[in-house]
Image (cartoon, rainbow, N blue to C red; front, side, top):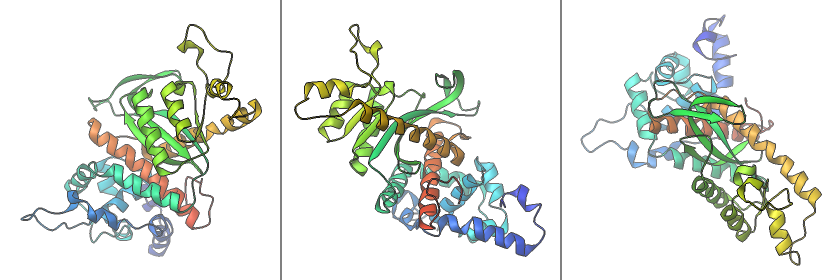
Length: 330
């Protein structure tokens, strides 16, 4: 049963609502501790400032709950957190005002990358990652009133959209481990390299998979130097004299045939796992990536990383509860 305002109208008794709130809200946070948010200077009141009525960890839980319930945008989030048992189970002492919600989101933008990294570390420590990483870009639709967004073309969907983009590296049960918010879906080489370096900083996989957009020599060289086998589709349009290969790494194997032996069947079988990053994209969109309501690029980026954080929270919680980590819901 949903704890959203729509569902509340259908609750037959207080006990039924208590059960719904306790079984949906509390499990989302029972295996995670967000007290580390108190370490960030941005959440520390100024010397003469008032003490915060609502603690950042509790507001973060409030946002995660709302995104989990498909509630997006500061106005709808504020309304959702007006329901007494919702704000109570999120750890708040009373419902926050919209000004409080706006301020928290504005403050969060300064540290949301690090919050995401902390959750990635917890997923890694829990053994949720595996030896295959995949990189891909996806579209992020924005509201028409976001003047910082732009019209882009999504070649996969063969349609234009108004918004931004996001480049992800994922692994394991639909777990994003590195990401970058971009102006358009198609990432440039610099973004691909940054996200790849961030992913390798988490752990070193055996394989790194990408489509033809990642037929980038520097990308391949960087991964091979790190001891990772890159498997990206060869793009013959990158040269006037194309090679007769399917994956760029085949050319490297040919050059180092004395030291490296990889069968075509192994490359094909491994590359087929790349669909995992597409499933991760879909899972993160279910967590809010496809519902960016903020105006401006900075807050839109913050909302995207909130969606990424929620996907990690869901995966970690499912794992800790003995459920299938790849599930979208608890």
